[in-house]
Length: 601
Image 1 (cartoon, rainbow, N blue to C red):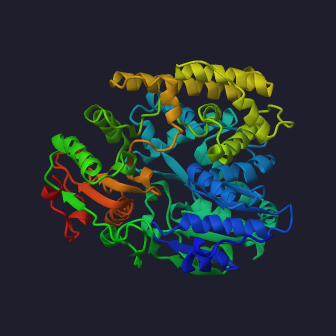
Image 2 (cartoon, rainbow, N blue to C red):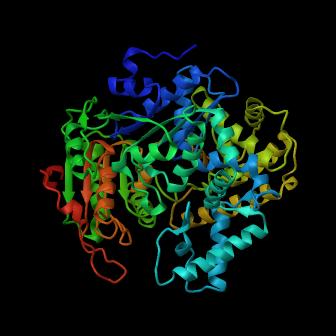
Image 3 (cartoon, rainbow, N blue to C red):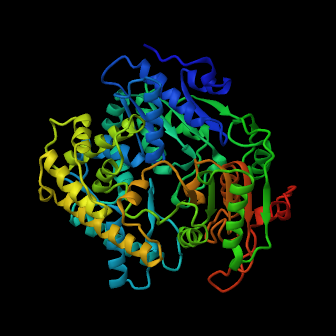
């Protein structure tokens, strides 16, 4: 039965995009319901599948987005059995590398993926040994179809950095390993050298949908376009995103134009747009529209459209007093404006500043809870097998979490299979039942997880030592978790090792969010407080795009709030040369009738 929705579920723009019979290139402004449109489009195409051998594929930028969309489809009553949804790296592993590894010289005898910790450890060892002038973060890189690209190229040290990377790659190859970035490169090499792979995949995929296309890398476009091109019109696509929010340029992400992508994949792409913002007040929309890089007509139509928003810009607070000012703004929004604490977000450009800020805010505001960087008491490595098990261990069975926990169970079974553990007779639901039956009375979080993991192995029917990869992931998970707890306790944060704190990591948002600009993308809050809006930070001093990047970053920050926005460009913060930062040029040049700080005293 073809999926049919209620008349009021979608607006006319969304219906136009979702019901279009061919391929679509959809530009969606902030708060326009693009996730809803994508969810309904996937549901519609799933309901139209006529063969059990056909699949719908959806590429998302984050695991969280994939979970949100799949849960939305399940709530619509549409079967997701023929849906594959996840990140591009997961797609390449599941559909290209693992099935066709035999055709790649580096993968043909088997491979495993090095997690972030393993990559950092190996690069650190190389730098400390033979290349002391190179720091591990100098070696951050990604691949394009033309080869290796350095994330922050330093012309004076480029050759040295590449030598470090060549040694690093050689070490991985000797141990039959690939890292996160090599997943894409190996997938591209297979697609480029074995055209039959694209032909076969295009015969299986009826639709390939891409969320947040503006954050897609050139090599990712090339992989997807090869499959679409091989389909010769039989495989269609639905791309959705916002070029004004393309803030991952340093990682190689960019917004390809409709014409360029159409030419690359050999398809006609209908241009559609979503221009109604359901999130923010008219005043917030008016303000963030100042930072359009590409022209866009955005209008507010949501329930908060007429809210009397406060939009403030502070260039007077000093670096030494910025935390006091953030505390004042939090109290004012909560106590005077009635904003719930979990609907407030504090945004800054760098994680290192935010981790310290979070701990100090916790001391200054003990009556509030915080969700911030470095606050999780264990390693949050999405690619670590035992992190995947911990998600199920630390969440309670409930109807609200059933779809998500079932998805996690599927990921665990797939990883066990790849690790050589026999699980052919175990379904996702049966694995969940095994996990739900494990009862442990233990207040210490790490002790709880150690016991849970032991009982998990026993319930599934394998020994931890049956797989070297699982042993390595186990040791890495606990080593990093112990170090994380020690750091938090040294910072004066008490009780972080308790099971209650561990369970809060996967609970719904309960406290004030602390996030980077990149981390807050896709989220929304009643109030956003942004600090360090300074030239050299927004944008980063090494960003070659300069003003264009600053506009995109400010556009993302200023389009997150529904109701209130507070921007701070504190004085007296010094750069690496001990010179004071100044306000971000794009921000200081913006002419707007800001609310005076005295009004929110």
